[in-house]
Amino acid sequence: MNVSMAKMPTTVNNYNKFIKLNMLEKEIWFVTGSQDLYGEETLKQVAKDSQQIVEGFNASDNIPVKIVFKPTVKSPTEITDICLQASSTKNCIGIVTWMHTFSPAKMWIKGLSVLNKPLCHLHTQFNAEVPWETIDMDFMNLNQSAHGDREFGHMMTRMRKNRKIIVGHWQEERIQKKLGNWARVAMGWNEFQNLTVARIGDNMREVSVTDGDKVEAQLRFGFSVNGYDSSDVVKHMNILTEDDVEALMKEYEESYELSDKLKPGGAQRQSLIDAAKIELGLRAFLEEGGFKAFTDTFENLGELKQLPGIATQRLMADGYGFGAEGDWKTSALLRALKVMATGLNGGTSFMEDYTYHFTPQKAYVLGSHMLEICPSIADAKPSCEVHPLGIGGKEDPVRLVFNSPAGPAINVSLVDLGNRFRLVVNEVEAVEPMGKLPNLPVARVIWDAKPDLEIAATSWILAGGAHHTVYSQALTTEFIEDFAEMAGIELVVIDKNTTIREFKNQLNANEAYYHLFKNKL
Image 1: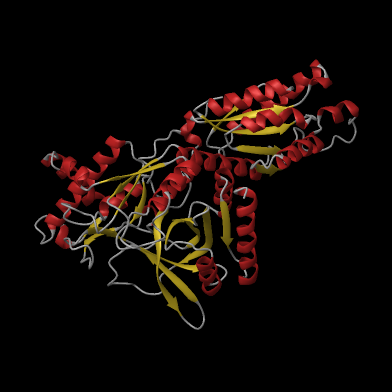
Image 2: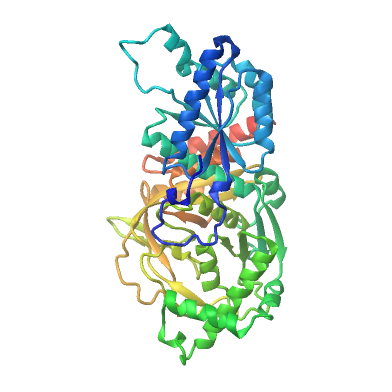
């Protein structure tokens, strides 16, 4: 059953024009387990019911990826074959398993051992209710997922197999949303594994958290990170035509509220022209190299007249990952989360905890950066302005200035702890600014960190979380939890229920777990 693009939800801000992943090309295979014990008629019914479930999923607006029905597996050979096929099929980004009947789990050992795609264990049954007046043993023998899935679950636990478990009737919207969100995460994980990140320049000098082991990252996650020089961008800028630049200038004028100094004849008009050239050159460089994520740093700008501000903001709006000061981990993470969030309401951006608002009643965080906040989180038409930048020794850069809407969000950080990677999540609530901020020339968002700033900041620091994050109003903690499971890495969450004592205990327990079990020391 074909799925049309019409089933993709509309975003609040239409900022996904670059992300042409085409979810319709990706597949999640639906694999039903059984055995030969039940006879031909029962197995025909198993297949028929499974096909109907798949058709129901593909008709759902909540599932953005095509679900593909696969024949019922009934033996170790059939199970191994389907797992090998899924692992080697490029467009297959994961499998959903369901035991309609009882499926002896020793049959699954070899197949699960070779499977390298994410797995979702759907614990459902075809019928929603017990047919009180007609139920008999034939019905019971057909509809055995209540214990068939438990047998399957035991084997995955015995094998220490990471998976997503979804429990409920397949026709419930809640269940379809959970499956759809998991499919989005599988898309993000697939992107992570095939991503190339371009580092234009190096890390900001002497900074720890933005650095890390790029080889280990490639081993763990699949994405590659390599360095380039600003001259690789400049060479594309040198072949631009006046028409190229003028077309982009017109787009700026139509899309943003230009300050008077940037309008035709304005005193800073040349700065906007220079910014347009940087954007066009940077886009050409990224497209030529097939890069979907990049970094830059104010210390390695070379011939660039200004730090890329509006260029970076617009590239993020089109779906590129970005990390400032050489932060390749955040750049890759942003790209993966943008893929997950495609079509959902709310934006996703590079972010930094910049300064605090302390009062006796409440404390808030002002999140921002020097320039590079994605306009997908803007609450209105951004203003395009030029202001001084006190570091880097270059000309004053062009940037988009805006506030972000109120509402729930998450901040996510990926850090290298030396012996492992850790994902840190803080659930937050964005709020309206308490003032106009007339002299703050950067995009910004104000948030209330859960459970409060004291506990949240203490926990974040204890966890070694970075000052750079990915901020998202489109995604929830559950997306990141599923992502950590797929990647097989540690996750710590700071939310309304966090206490310092319990958080310390969790970190200590995790330290032992990852040393002894995951690293097999």
